[in-house]
Image (tube, rainbow, N blue to C red):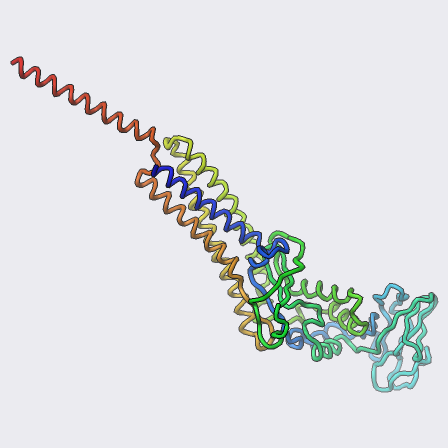
Length: 425
């Protein structure tokens, strides 16, 4: 009876180890409530200060071209800008050899086009028209034509990229970038979340009532790269038909020029992105190993219920599996906890400067550490069972008792013979 009880306990603990590690591994794999709560860390950019995130001066160093509407004017020299490209499909593409808008800032008009320009600025026209053969500009209209009747409105001059970023940062919020209220990060991707109490946004950081939706397509060992995610969100906002043309132009300028040279992350996060990515891949691999080895251990435990304990190799192999599972579970728990405690501290230590706060998931770390605890109990009960002989089968015990009975009967026979000899004498 004791044999069956201990075997049952070991199997139960091995199953718990496997399931808990699996729950930690698949957290946020899909847009399901029971999964989305098991994230590694989340971020709330609800009070994001764009001026701190984007370094406008570094944007100026990167590019001095001008943007107007959906069109980019590359830097053609000290005085003029040439139309380089337009993202609007109906706009004729121009090259750097096209006629400059302003050849001389001191002139009242451009000699080549007759377009009035400011005498002391790099201003470009408020509108232009294009034909199949050449680019001509007019100041009376605000349309783009490509030799057909189609047209689209464009805004007035937005300035160079640095100016765009500076103005946009001073007058916009995180929602203007297309960012969500909350981002939860897992080993498979990230999910966008909405804060239930919208009135608290801008006043406090509320992580108690968040609904996660729109999870990304699952990707093993996913790493949350801030720059990549930012560009994806910018693209979504730019492609949104509800986005007005001025905002779309500004976001396009930011998207095309933002890099880690001008994206300012909190603390030392940017310096450690590569090491954090490697650690995330290692964490994923270790959790997979814990799940697989735990499953194998369960199979071995089940075989131990029907096989003779004389198979010492099987028992020794199972014990090695149990020890390895425990070590890997502790390493995974420690690695994930240490890594994302570091990320949280880097973000939250600069929350006043950036307006972003992060939280760790209770569910994920409860899963990993509970899995490690279950693996430890498997080792304890396994050692206890072997040391106390609790895994001996009835057959083994029968052999032992039978041998003892045979020894006792033979001793009794010897004593009887001795008594008979003494009686004869």
